[in-house]
Length: 547
Image 1 (cartoon, rainbow, N blue to C red):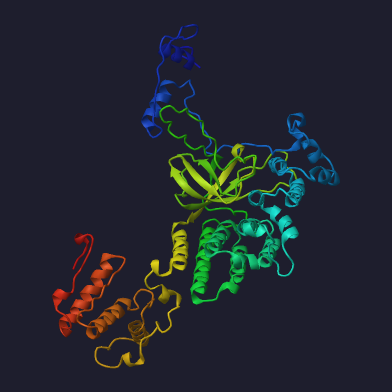
Image 2 (image 1 turned 180 degrees about the vertical axis):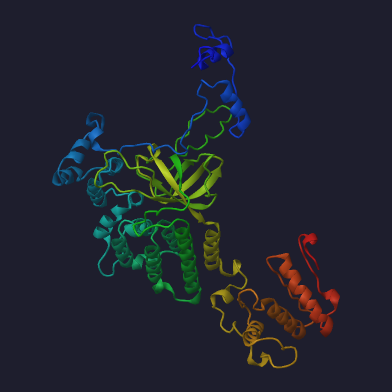
């Protein structure tokens, strides 16, 4: 290098002067948009000796977490007797649990599930079931919190012939059936066998309870073949109560809706037969979960403010609640999800725990988004989350919207429960009105005379059947002449009904109404069946009506 050529360091000193041991009297802050490339280049040239760029990973490594175990329990700080229950042999534990108050058994069960002492939780449940102080809805809460406990209950209290739940457990038959459904992914054969043994209790459910079980199964059973088998088994157990076409129609429609929801979920989030989500085309987003803290009520004059506690997340000492758990998921605004309000979502751990045991299994939770804000959503879970859920990161999978299928299921329930109050032609839908399908044979029409040119056999059959029926459904792909058939039916009605009769023709779009009305007006001009002013076009927005 030539001695006359200044070094880069000397050029830097000439431009910026020496700053060593010089007090800082001002700070210059530059805010540069990540899209302003010119400003970035100028900024880098001005401070070519200062690192001005740092690359960050879009998604960092999942936060590690540890499972709760007994290794870190300080027994001196726990309730008396806990150390004996969770360290001694089964015989010693059964002796210690015999005659224990039910409130103490609730505390022991909560402690066992928090620390993943699965085997001892079965021992505690056995003591609960034999306790004279048994609280039946506490049992329902525990089996919903850890569904595998239901098999211990069924082993003890499911009668042989006929196989039905004995009192007082028949009062919680729906939570018991829900717990069996929640365990299908982990133990499909045992769960399906249990559902068959619970045939009497499934038949004893009200229709609203039965549709709730169907809905749960369609949401939480993830394997395509397994969910179909589960729904069909549930449907078959209701055969004994199908005493009339009304309930038979309701069962058939509810099954179809549940199958459709399950298929939509599988198409959106494919899973293997063990219920684990497969690799997705669009990777799931990473979220953190935490319990929802309700807003405290506004204090009135003279009252003190009370700090709100989380709801549906921490079990009360008296026992767990059988209600669904509500959690809040924090979503990064720069990583939006396709999940929206009323979406079915699945949550899986983003990482494995440190020092995992052989009994550890990847817990997948299903839920529905009940509230959606920018940056967070509230999810109502079908499963109880693991005790470490707030310390973990979760992968959120979108399984599609439930709005349509939920509305369809609610409509079926209302149609069955309210009958004619829900729908004026309920008997026509369910087939309970004898003789409502066809009119008298004397009202038969001929399809061979003038005006029937251009109609094929299927169109003639559709016109004849629709004209003679109180309710009919005409189905066909585009281009098969459905509009032509509707116009012909209108012609037959106008020509044969009384002068005082009125016909209402509706459609889901303005274009469909205009299309039928224009073609009927052309036919009416040639036949002069009714005066033109008798045809009235009604619309909420007259600008959208072309006729």
